[in-house]
Each structure stands twice: as C-alpha cells, then as structure tokens.
Image 1 (cartoon, rainbow, N blue to C red):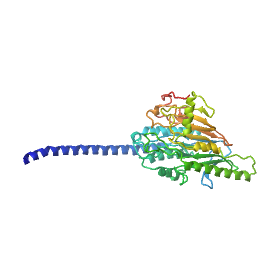
Image 2: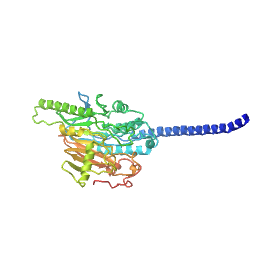
Image 3: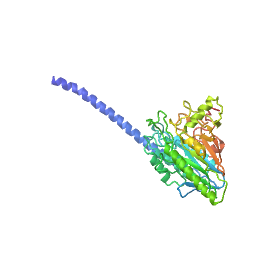
Image 4: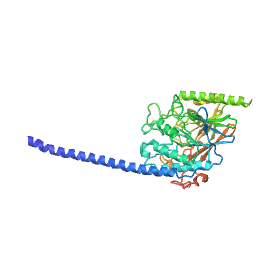
Amino acid sequence: MSKKTNNEAKPKKKIGKKILMALGIIFAVIVVFVCVTTVITVVGDRATMKKAESFETVVNDNAIIPVKDNDGNWTFTTDRDFKILQLTDVHIGGGWMSLKKDSMAINAVAAMVTAEKPDLVVVTGDISYPVPFQAGTFNNKISAKIFAALMEKLGVYWTMTMGNHDTELYSYYSREEIGDLYENGGYKYCLFQKGPDDVDGTGNAVINIKNTDGIITESIFTIDSHSYTDGDFLGIQWKYDNIHENQVAWYCETIDKLNAYNDNIYEKHNIDTKSDIKSLAFFHIPPTEVKESWDKYVENGYKDTEDIKLVYGVAGETGKVVYCGVHDDNLIETMLEKGSTKGVFFGHDHKNNLSFDYKGIRLTYGLSVDYLAYPGIYKLGSQRGCTVITVNSDGEFNCKAENYYQDKYTSLYEKEGVTMQEVTYEGLAGR
C-alpha cells in the first residue's frame, strides 16, 4: 500500500512543478513587459517633453502682463479688446501607448495658440488622460507637466479648470496634488489658483480685466465641476457631478465683492453712470441647462424657442447627447438672478460644439483637441479646434468656434498623422 501511495505522489509532484514553472514564466513575462513598457514610456515622454519645449515663443508686441491685486486675484489692465482662447479636452495620455497621439495633440495646441496670439488661454478640463488601457500609464502628472512645459515655451498666459479625467480614482496624483503642481510648480505663465480651502473643488478662482481707471470691465471665473458621483467611481455609468452649493455661494459673494470694488472706483472718479460687473465662467462638465436647451430645440423641430436659441454649432454625441451632471444645481439660475455672467464655456462632450442663448446667457461648448479618448476620433475633423472669445473694452463679448483644419493653423508646423485632406468631416446632428 505504501509503495503504491509513493508512486501516486510522484506525478502530483511533477504537476506541481509544472504549475510553478508556468507561474514563474508568466511572472517573468509580466516583469519583462513592465520593464520594456516603462523604458518606452520614459524615453517616449522625454521625446514628447523635448518636442513641447521645441516650439517657438509666440511673438505678441501688444502683450499684457498680469499682476495680483490686493485680494490675490490675477488682474490684466488694458483699454483694448481682450482675447481669450478656450481649449478643451486635450487628452494627453503620457504613457507608452499614447506617444504618437500625444505628439499630435501638443502640435495642434501649439499651432492654434501661435496663430491666435491670445492674451489668455483657458483650458476647460481634461488636459490629462491617464487611462491605462489607452494611455498605458496611471501617472497623470506626466501629461500635466508636458502641457505646462508647452505653454511655458509658447510664453502665453494660461489657466485651466479640472476635468473628470485629470485626476481619476486610480491615478497616481490627487486633484489637490495636480492643482499644487499648476499653482506652485514654478510656471511663469500659469495663472491657475487652487482657490479657497472652504469651497468644494480645486481651481475655483477669478481673473479680472481692468481698464486704466481701475474699473473691472470683465471677470473670468474658473470653477471645478468635479468628476463622478453616486457611487460611479470609475465613470463607467456616466454619472457626473454638478457644481456644489458652496461654490454657488462663493460665486455670489465674489460678484458682490467685485461690484462693491467697482462702486468705490466710480465714486473716486465721480462717474455717475455705473454698471454691474460683467463676467464669463469656465468649467468642464456642461450644466443641465444645456441638455434642457438641446431637448427643447429638438422637440420644437430643430427650431428656436422663445427662451432658447441656437447661435451656432452641431451635436455629434449619441445616446443622451448632452452628458451633464445627474442632479440639479442652481448655478445658472443664480447667474440669471445676479445678472453678471453672460457667457458660460465648457467641454467634456468631445463631438458637441453647440452654442445656445439660454434666457440671455450664452452656453457654449468649446471645440475639443482629443486624439486619444474616443476610438477613431483622431481621424475625425469636425469637432477639433478652439473657441476664440473677444471681450470688448465695455465688457461685452463675442465668441467663434474655429476648426483646426484651416491653413492658418496647420501650415505653422509639420503636419502629423492625419492631414486636413485625409480627415473625415462626419455628418453631425442639429445643423
């Protein structure tokens, strides 16, 4: 009996050894894979960073240098029109899988900023895209550094709002840490501020434009629209957050404070004709009023209603079309009550570039840059570009969507990947 038992044990030992050998081989393959991809990422990111630092500095003989006021807010002083360039959803992956598309994205950004020569660039979220199965990394700081290096080399003042992808749950760095990089990373041209500690989110801030009399002619609000909510930690159910109540309260308090400041200046200069502060707001996730506008526009046979008018643009997203926050908030209602903010700019839905007049407030999608996040989007061209916003000296503004595939942009630098002749201008809804 004992001999038979020993004989039976030998095959089991052999099977055990084979399993251990198989596991060892799998582990070795994983180690080799990780090592190789890490080397590719490091070398590739160095090349991308080198490219970001290779562009020529934008020449603007009429540039305005901002300074911080007594409240710590960045302030531009000018009596001329002020030009803002909105970029959104740049989606730099920063990993070994996204190297080519990262290069394409920074090329597009450099070309548009160089051609437009704006006074200020505002990026409405998703500079970073650390999604591992598309980018090949969890490191969201790499892409943030690449973009910051690009803007520093271009020498144009810029700020940004946080998007849902800038800091994923699985990313290496938190919102606070990425915000600290932008604010305290030694970037001369970056005007990003993390904002008050007692207000939800990172990046709630205001930038002011004053005339030479010291009167604020326009205030530019950046607001964190947060990320996912209601247990959708990875965003796979598209449950997006809304602007929080204490952010709306901060917005109201800031408007009141800016109005009080201007009233003092009016009195100082004995100016009888007074006007309330005019302002613009920038954040990532569209407000619920955009979905309301789109739904009512469609219900009315793709025609304007009394309160909702399509100024320009098309809808290219499918399903819900507008992927706004899943709950109601009172930001837009508050803006209507305060009467200050006349333009709201956002991104998030890459194929939408709609601009609605909603009860007197312009709700506008920026054209996206994204080459990476949506499958095959690098071959599509209708949605890619920027939004040019001109603020007049009296605080009034106008905005225009500019498609990337124009000679004034693509002729500046060597074309990479899909050219303007090869890109597909897909048919989108809502024309």
